[in-house]
View 1 (cartoon, helix red, strand yellow):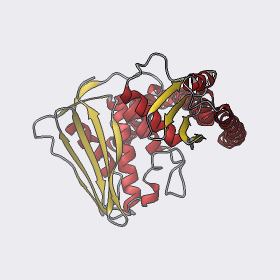
View 2: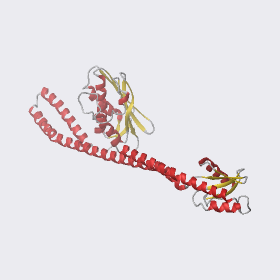
View 3: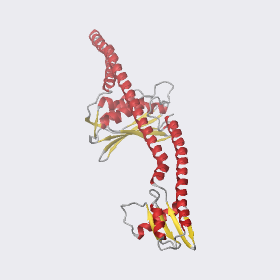
View 4: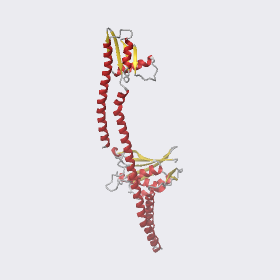
Length: 375
């Protein structure tokens, strides 16, 4: 709407200023023609003082740059050219060439003597002709600044809502988690000596620990997390093993062996584990129960790279730019916040990048995480 209003203003200004510029141009040519008519009527070009009088007529013009030449193109007089320029022959010829391109010359013929009066637009007319374009540039700049300010305010508002929801979620989870921990300890004492119940309580405690981790993750949203050097192979293995226990049997997992030389990356483990889990969950959804998910790690002088690939259904080409936007999902259930959250964690909290490296329909997708080695 703002762009349409701005365009309308520019079009009106363009039509209006063009009309004024045309009127001024016609008046300027009429003035030059009037000088030429005065010279023709003077019958003095052949008199000794004739050219002096002609010069006085031209010099009487205080605004329009003009040059008088003879029939052979030799410059006789000039007026209203920049005062700070030396009147060299090369400079005057250059100005004459500009005037020849700008306007049709006025031919002066008096008793067989032919002269030509050349002129160009005044500075005022030139500025007026460029005014609509200057106005268009200013309006465009205004719209860009307005759009940037609106987008920044909108992003800030979204971030505040996101952070507020995350903090509130962590707070709401805190009370039932504390209660579950207390009940676990109570049941553990009550089931002492019963191996079967103890094994169940052990798994129960793992799930409670998982809820504690989720609450911790939500509590860190909006706060500057502490990054620490971590062996990325161990982080990848831990997350892959966790997801493998919850994946269909026909899904194959392939990830680097932790026995190789450690590869350090500066991350916040709880948040970065969340990133990997979201990518692996999306990969599992893309496989529909059968296929392969693989992880690959490598580095160069500046960055550490992590590729998460699957052999699933792929991402349509038209959706590659929207996969990280809130609300994007291919599932019937879900809010489509996983990849959006992943992008925020990688870029805002780890100063890295995450993007779709490649994707092909019915062949698979590869997401790449790029983490800087220095901060």
